[in-house]
Image (cartoon, rainbow, N blue to C red; front, side):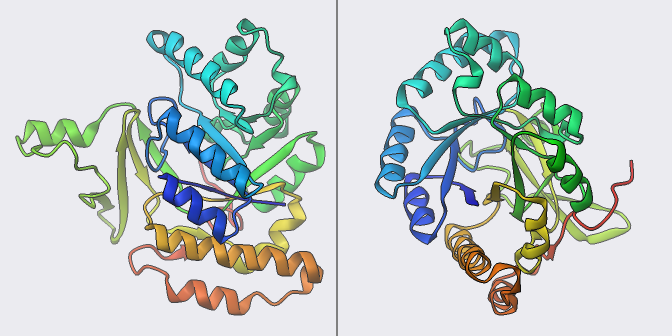
Length: 308
């Protein structure tokens, strides 16, 4: 079972592998959604070198929806990633399959992880992409454990589940924050980001719940006010038989994420050695010690029904 995280720099790649991550996701915001930071191809190559030194894996996110005027540069980027021999590409647009065929490659002959955001909610959808050649399916965060268990029992592919971190609640391709600040003539420092400004939205009836705003080249993303934390629910989560457990590092510091990776590494190792009888309460207490006041822990939708 793989412990997976995403990284914002080569320093984080090094530190997160040292903390116990089995694989790392990196990328560039021009080709991926909500990456913590954009890494150049040279940096990705260096990250691959670090991964090999640790005997771990490196994945590159390419899950942004591709528009017509970006087709050529996306294909060129894909070619370069294949030349670097990264361990997997995480795609989310059917154009990826067409591009691979144009390059004379069979999608089924390479490692492709399919991440199409909120649309991966049924066995039929997941199976469609698996039959196209996707080795792994990133399931929607709105699924319950029971729904995941049902999908996995009928799916001939790996699944990836979120175990720690924020989720995205809203996405618009428009840069809403930047446009507003320009309108107000207060957008002075281009190096600032929506995260560094600590911008958020609230609901009128729940003003204490602050939903952070994350903005990148692909527009505006409103994130959950809480963080999924499945540390003490891992035994039940593992009954869904996931191949990869993902820690979303967005919105958190390197040291915070490093600590979380270490805790989950210890939890997975305990469960591996002691089966489902391992006591994880002490690890949860360690996690509670660094829980942020404005980002409480929750179990997401794993134990509740999504109402549409």
